[in-house]
Image (tube, rainbow, N blue to C red; front, side):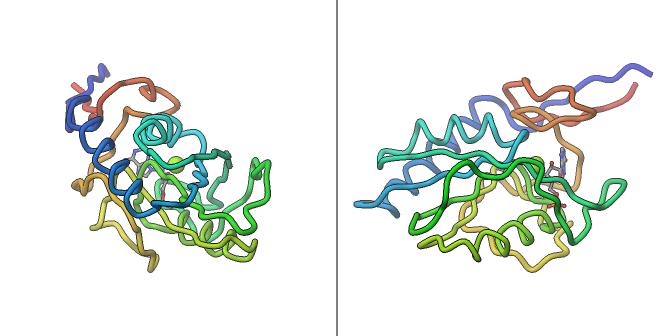
Length: 174
Ligand code: IMP
Ligand code: MG
């Protein structure tokens, strides 16, 4: 079965929105520094683009987590595959996610990081599928609300493929 990717959000639309998010964060954090936590691997492209658009001092750290769930729905538990390199104590943290689906991953992650003494923890996601939300998680900054379709590109994968696409698309099978 051949597959192709239909464009949902163009590179220009995505980059324009990330620039706006960066400007908003720069205003909100005026006089402070921002510690961005990139959730590997999907958020790498978004984190880089966002960090470039933030005008207050930025530091970065990376974390990799996996859901215990099987299939396409994540469970309420997560496993740390790679923990942060530095302490977040006293820092103003923003967790950077590529997409929020059920919300389980971010819900668990925020609860876990809250115990580590950060000064504040906010969450940003490039994409949000509100229809799919299960966990009671509040996102502080969101790029786009999208319909319930499986998307790829800009870091998001389908079987580890398509992360490098510079736009957001939907995989279709002919
Ligand atoms: P949640 O815990 O259900 O919110 O799952 C979030 C994670 O599931 C994201 O960080 C992605 O890794 C993955 N995910 C959810 N929806 C999609 C999608 O449409 N395309 C690619 N990955 C997705
Ligand atoms: Mg992810």
